[in-house]
Image (cartoon, rainbow, N blue to C red; front, side, top):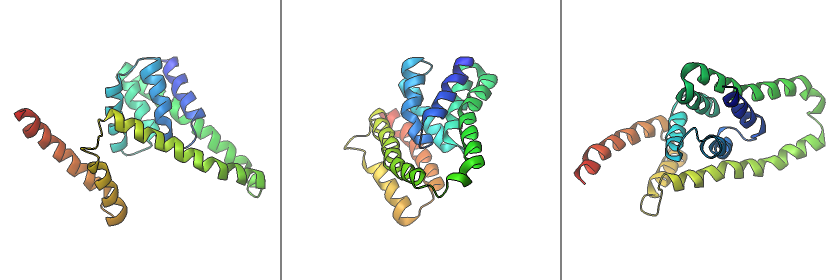
Length: 177
C-alpha cells in the first residue's frame, strides 16, 4: 500500500494543471509501469471519475485504490493524491502576501498557462484514440461541446441523455448485430 500512496503522492506533487493534466502521468504509472489496470479499464475509470462529484484526481485515486485492495487502499490512494496539493496551498497561503506583487512570480505564472493548456489537451487526444473516436463518430463530442458552449445545455443533462443512449445502443443495436 505504500507504493500506492507514493505513486499518487508523486502524481499530485509533480503535476501542474489539475486533474486532466494528471491523466498522462496516472496512465504511465498505473497502466504501463505497475500494470494495476488495463488501458481499457483505465479509460472506463476516467469516465466514471469525471461523472462523480468532487476532485477528479481524488476520485480516480479512490477507484484505483479500491480496485487494488478495497477501502483501506482507496483511502491511502486518496490521501496520497490530496496531500501534495494541501501542503503546497498551505505554503502558498503562508507566504503569498510576500510575493503577490513580485514581477518574477507573476511572469512565472503567466508562462505556465500555455504549458497547462498543452498538458490538458494531450489527454484529450490520447483518450480519443483509446475511445475509438474516428471521423465516423467525431460528431458526438463536437455536438456536446457546441451544446454546452453555445446553448448552455447542462452537462448533467448531457450525461443522463448519453447514458440512456448508451444503454439503448447496447441493448438494441449491438444485440442485433
